Amino acid sequence: QVHLVESGGGLVQAGGSLRLSCTASGSIYSIHAMGWHRQAPGNQRELVARITSGGSANYADSVEGRFTLSMDNAKNTVYLQMNSLKPEDTAVYYCNALLTASTNWYGMDYWGKGTLVTVSS
Image (cartoon, rainbow, N blue to C red; front, side, top):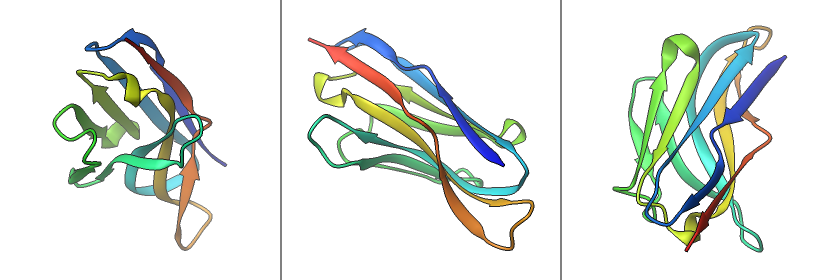
């Protein structure tokens, strides 16, 4: 079984910073990409940032320049450094991984349970 465990969510004032972490564990053969999506109340889930195992990252326009995504391949962990937070960043953030499990022949998407980020004004 593969599990994604998130941490780092919480309450912060506008302009502040938070760092989210997500660790993939279990019977993993290889990780191809990891990233974060978020869903605010009443909104659709949207891509925030995604990074490949080679270190190439992409960001949503709304977070470009404020958020930084990095991956520690040895630890199967991705970090999302969030700076200059805005109230509109308030959402449940979900970790996502595209990986190949040890028992499979193919890659699949896996999801964490989500961690709540609340930015107050």
